[in-house]
Image (cartoon, rainbow, N blue to C red; front, side):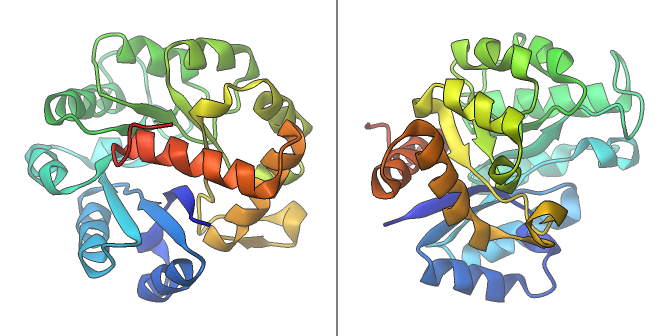
Length: 246
């Protein structure tokens, strides 16, 4: 059975090639997200080296927006990439309101994604409404809100046809379990957000935890593990544009 890690910072690993090879043995596809120009370049190279396992997403994370001037490179890289990300807003890093560097970078990359027809991955921590408002002005083909935790906005996100991803925190977070239970299953993806580790899970993390996330979704949804894995991989195919069936 094929599974997918829809959000992993592969370029941040000490030995990303090893992580890619381990994931290939697990039949696990990796969507490698970037935070700036350098990590975008690294992830594109990893996708070239591991074309059956790694799909590169290129973009500027909110934490890097104030360091970013020209985004001409993003237009060029997006032609080769599988998608645009990780992009978004987060007031924990710097000002994220209208006219801020974060808002400027986010909207420019949304425009690039719309013009290139590439899916986006949105980081929206503590700025969920602002991220959603900006998306009303652009039309990227598919949108993923990664590690989305705003329970009262979940229905709004899904009513727009946007995807949400659940990661290892699902294994211990009652709120995330409630959100998963009430989600539209056709709009759910699995992720690790590696190399982030999780204290409540003994300090482990990474793509190897994705099967555990799938198992927990199966429990919450009262489905078999295989059925849940197949459903999630169909969702992954639609999100990345690799398949529109299912």
